[in-house]
Length: 393
Image 1 (cartoon, rainbow, N blue to C red):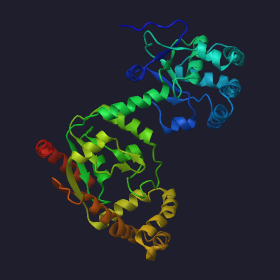
Image 2: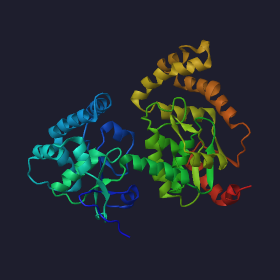
Image 3: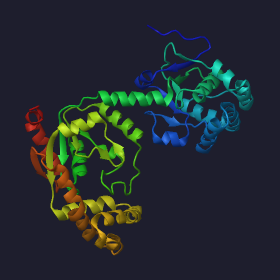
Image 4: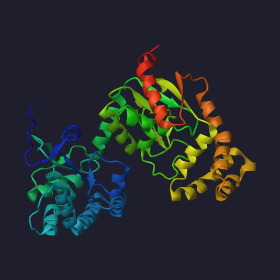
């Protein structure tokens, strides 16, 4: 049954409706910093306020009054309403009418925050347009409602708000992750540097859709130096990308690299972690020299990585003991990368891994020296033995 539209309401659509609409164009009106932490799939950022403006408005709201914050927001909006409308219009493929936009902002907001809140009441849209322009802020408040109302007054009839804003989307992500149930799962395990990620990505090439790459989603290698050369993602962004991958499904089994509960600073959701812990473990192995080569290629492939690694090595020196103070940095500075990596493997990473894996059994072992060959062998093994190996005991 269609939901009745409320008279004079700002039309809104639910998160589920928007995500299910393939033609939806989503505009996130939050500040660039808010957007960077996480955002809806396919969303673009057209901020109503920049980061500094948002911070000032928030300070005024907390320390002075909502009215003072509203007045400052009104002033900021007048200053860049033209650029805002132009950016939204470009995304919507719409030509806005010639108008005195600043005057219209003043007219819309002249009654103050209480009058505007009373006028701009959200109400469910009767039917979502074929290609809706969905605008939202953090909680579906005045930021987005006022812009939706403003654009509709200018003639953009397909503009609607997102019911509950980003906060509703975040609740949706958490609920869907909590409800996820995966297919039979196989977990690649092995010492640091054997090339688990390389094999996983080769396997994805051979069997598209089989794999879940948690390190790629987190932008972190899941080790104490795992952020070197990368830009790790926030917990919320990681979970949004993770849900997107899970919802695409797996045409066969799920193959994932063995991780701790944390991949860098992000925490693997409970349902995915349970799949890792209960999955069938498959071991990858490689000679020390191969492992050293893999790690040097990975960690020092980018010019900026060397300086970043140098800054972080003292932490590991402290972990290894006093006699190593300054020694790891010296090895790096002198170009003794292979020696440095061997020390880290033998004295830190390998003992740590063996402790964490103590008592775990593996169903098969594979040489990972050639990632493509290892991936082919894994695919054959899973297809030949996987159903029996993954069956509950």
